Image: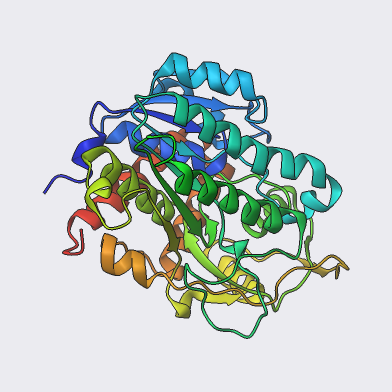
Length: 364
């Protein structure tokens, strides 16, 4: 069985390719034979997975462009003429969105609109997979999983900007017949990701890694907060399925032939508290000194999404348990700590192991 056959030799534009998820995506797309074009700002963290694993060598081209600059985006897409687009570029963090709400809305909403417009005007583009977040839902925190049709909202600028991006996407999707344009626009709403190579601030695993590597305490805002944790490759897997369906024409033949929203999250048993993650990372790597520092800024205490649609219609299910995901994550950071020259090899091995496991599954 060949996984994702339509990716081979396809020209795919990846926005945000220099980020944590974008770097894993580029390694995966290259493995399946795609021609990858990158559009992003330079890596925002040092170190970065992009630099440590030489992602640039996997690319057919790349351009450092701010997604919020409409003409630059339009000109670049028209020049590349990709077959499809994976849109990852974003301001992806809740706490920085409080410090810079204008920049957050500018990148996440206007940037998405710029890309949609560029795709609409470039006839080579068959479709877009736009990545938003599980935080797009209006969360009343009653503990029930959110299905894709649940009401959208946001308690903070980041969540609200991603919900607004979803509204813009829906507006474009519904307007396509008026423009006489056949274009698939899928959105993917993923749960909290973990995995090797994330160095972002204000994220639990990177903060934990910095605490261990620098022999300093880790500051925790809410140890009881529960999230749907999953390995980054589980989400990459979902994105590749959607891209493959667009490129093969399968989506265009479906009932929702202009695209739709998809949840990609773990099972309910892997929706655990921050405290549980800390305890498991201490087991798989090393204990960290923990300091509590509550914040007045709103963060949801509980968030669970229902991914049954992706399971039933796409055959997508995370093959790794939370413990397996954390063990792989710890392995990556321990390699950085003890033998950084092996990081590229570890990254490639984890990638190959993941898709070998998927290939053995009867689901795809």
